Image (cartoon, rainbow over all chains, first blue to last red; front, side, top):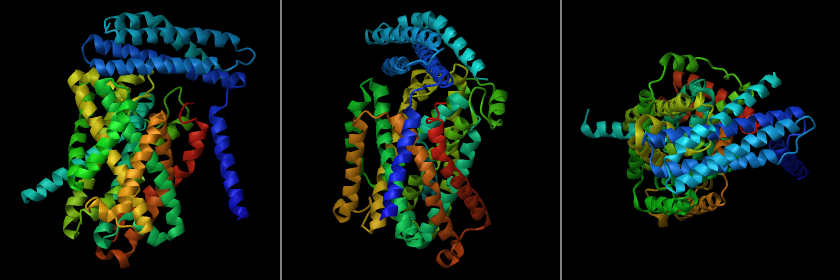
Length: 153
Length: 412
């Protein structure tokens, strides 16, 4: 009986430890930079999915139903990605990184939210223009990822 | 060859192709293709060889003993071992039912733009009606044939005009791409194995063989179905990886949704291609919902010795039918909690990979037992491939949980 209790306790501790490891906020500068790189990668992915979709809509290759769903998903994802990142307190020496990435996240989020409103209003032609306007932000995100990867080496 | 036999070959093979792909493949293959190109395609080849070997072995055992896989696990390894296998397989398959049901709802959402949570109860009612009204074999053939529409991914590869030398170079470079670490590469290796060698496939395959009353004369048909169907299913999986590679890899897109899995098909083939892909996603996930659901019922019934089977009227297999209905209700409730089905799928396939040795070991032992199997016992090829697959599954099983935690489910 005692062995079973110990086994259950050990398993509970293991599961709790695993969950904590996955969810813990970044405390060190190094961990923060890793999470910043992941955040920038996720934002770039969301923006580029919207770009690909804008191209497909412009050439009539995707149904409006599927396009609405995809735009909604990337817009919600961008909001969540941004909220998660801004929710972490930056360690010392990372305030600059936090401000830079938060600004980019806000721009991507706003652009995708505008796309979401546009598709619900049936304003399909605005998607291509929106994708073109996002290019400078996407370039900055790409540069930031490269910088963070270089710094990690 | 008699026309009826040819028909059995064709339908069985088509069912195997359609049945190979489920929500786990749709998500894992697209994620892998977008992040690693074809650098993990070799894992799909290994998985196909492994699952084909064990499916053939378990069907041969069923033909000889007329007993399905879980029944054999209990009698061969004892009730304690079987209870551990039951608890693990039941929990993982239960999670997969929820994920597959959500997959059906995603396909309907993409077709209608109505939120998937509103489609989940509709999908559950549809599943219940199909189970209640359609005979086992008809059910299997319909979703197997409809699942063939997934071949649109293979056509999409051609239409995307790939650089074949780059594809080949990627497929023959079994290591992470620049910017990705070895632990993440290995995590996705585990994910692919979990998605493509699922224990529920084995339970369903062998229990289905009992339900369909396979005999020695069905051996050739069964072997052709396995040896042609599973490799073609693997080809579909590689095609999903390939289109994700061609469209998403250079753009740096990470796949998080089923809508992204089908986007390359739309880019390659337009609206018609997209609609065909959505029919394929619907059929593959609907079929897998039925398979996973039946597998949970089979596992419980075979462990506790209840009467079971889709071929029997529900009143004659009341506990089996109640277990299936209860699991469907539970999965529907779980899907409606707004838990992210994609995350659930990834976690379920990783845990599924952890359980593989518990499923493979008893099948290999019985397949080797000449007293039980007589002249249908494993030959040298079955034993070599079976043992290698078992060893691989043990390594994967041990590494799966640490990799899941260490990489935060492939995040970093």
